[in-house]
Length: 104
Image (cartoon, rainbow, N blue to C red; front, side):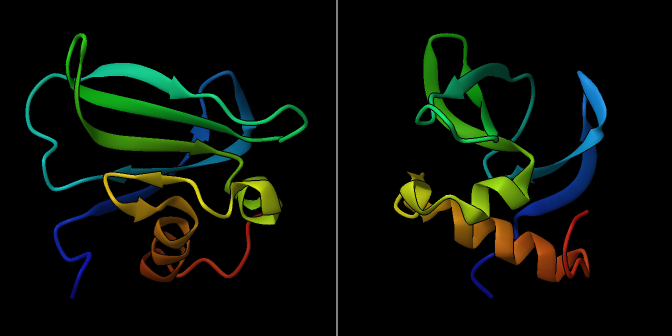
């Protein structure tokens, strides 16, 4: 399975516990990480945080998708990739792994 070494979890956004967040850890997540963000187009009601292996960049080792439903519904985000993986596909894999039909 292509995603067998990935870790997926469902949490809440730290600034608003009513907003769901999907955390996706890539296989290269080991040790301390450094947070960043991928800027999304204006009007998108989602946030895409990244965690890096090094302070000034390195490889992305984790994604935090705030409001994944909004991310999935935004057609302008169809082609966003991280480490060669389509982010929408990663969210769908997380839903399957976590037995989520839809987030409210």
